[in-house]
Structures are given as C-alpha cells and as structure tokens.
Length: 301
Image 1 (cartoon, one colour):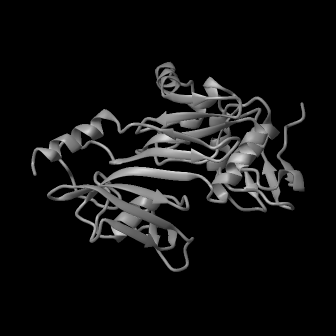
Image 2 (cartoon, rainbow, N blue to C red; image 1 turned 90 degrees about the vertical axis):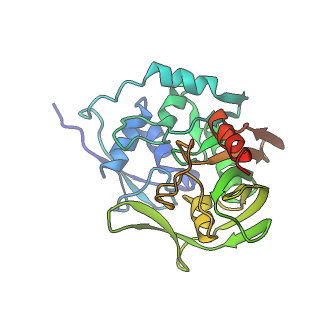
C-alpha cells in the first residue's frame, strides 16, 4: 500500500486572501476543524516553508504544504452540553451568517489542554460556519460566523477594511483622565521571559486605535464603552493598561488587580454593526455576573 504523502499546493488568484484554516478545510475534505487546527499547531502545515497561524491570509504564489490525514489521531468528541450551550447563545441567523452571544471561557481554537474550541462547536451546529473575526477566550459577546465561502469573503473584507462598527463594555481598574480618551498606539506580539505570549505597545507594531468613553465612575473604577477601529490581539486590554487603567480581572496585563465578586475578565462585546449584505446592528446584554459586579460597586460609592 502506498504511504500517503504531503502535497505542495500553490495559491492561485482565486484563493488569494483566504484564511489558512478555511483553505485546509476545503483541501482536506470532510475532516473535523479541530484536526485542521492541530495540524497547523504542530507544524505539519507550512506556508513557503515556515509555520503560520490558522487565520493567516494566503497570497497569490504562496506554497502551502498540505499533510496527509489518514494516520492522524481521531478528533476528540465534542461535548454535547457545550454544543447546546452555543446553540442557545445564537442571537440571529440568516442565509449569509449567524450571530452568537459568545460565552466567556470558550477559546476559538483548540489549545491549553482542550482538543476542541468554539469554532468546532459552531461547526457542529452548521458545517458551513466560518469565523470571520475572534474574541479572546475570556471575552463574551457578539461574534459573527459566515455561512458559506462568499459570505466569508465579504465579511472578512468588511472587517479588514474597518467598515464594521465594534463596541465593547469594560470595567477599568483606576480612572481615565477625561470622559473620552483616545489611545492611538501600535501593538506588537512578543513572548515574555516566562514564555507567555503578550502584546505590547511598540513603534514597530501594527497600527491600533481605541476610543474609551466613560459611562459611569465609581470610587476606584470606571465603567466604559470601548470602540476599536482595528482589531488587534488584546487591543482593548493593552490600550487600557497603557492609559493607566487596565481592564478589571485581567490577570495578564494587571496581575494582582483582584476585585471581589469578579471571577473573569470584565470585557464584553456589546454592539456590532455589519455593512453586508444589509446594514444591520446586533447587540448582546451584559452578562448577569458582570451586572452583579456593577451593582455591588454602586452600593460602595
């Protein structure tokens, strides 16, 4: 029997701009999305000889190493309770996309001891579902999944061109100097001395701009709306820390900043306006556990 070998696929103009994970889903056929992420994470997939992230955008002329999948370990079984949790969190669904009120604590991709992620759970509900943006594991709120290739392309372009209006609610530890503060500071991913991935403000980083608007002030905290014009990793968290008022519950950028009653990151994607296929607005209310924290702060004024 012939041993299956890796294939070297050159990207043509028709697939330029497609994300690596979505490209592999099509190339590998009927395989679990968790398997695709495992192949990428373990370095079995290469772009032009180098490792890449699942959301890496392919360009015309790129050469992608597509490994064989016959001998791969079977994908982990998805927990039924988690699938139903995600199904119940769907806010809106139409032929082009679905909108989810993402629960806190669900990572988009496998990792950190889990063989599956949110993307796999959504794909179990609709196999056409393709994530077009992401939220941090501990961030809750509005998240969009395209249904089908054309929808994925249109929505990814909308996010890339910054024509999507995204607003978050956050509780900051400390106070902003004014009721409206704009942080325009480039961000760069690094690995710290402990091996942990972090994002820092760096002139050589990618451009990023966040507008903070104070909604309510407490004795030691500000409750704010954060509007981002870009969508960099940890953008709001790093910009809040840069402003001297890190997001409450952020163990990575504000270690030791504990707040009684808060068991998670206080960051919630509350509002999303999509320009395609029609101008539509979606919102998700602040989760009960975060509302309870605000109520407790109001009694301590």
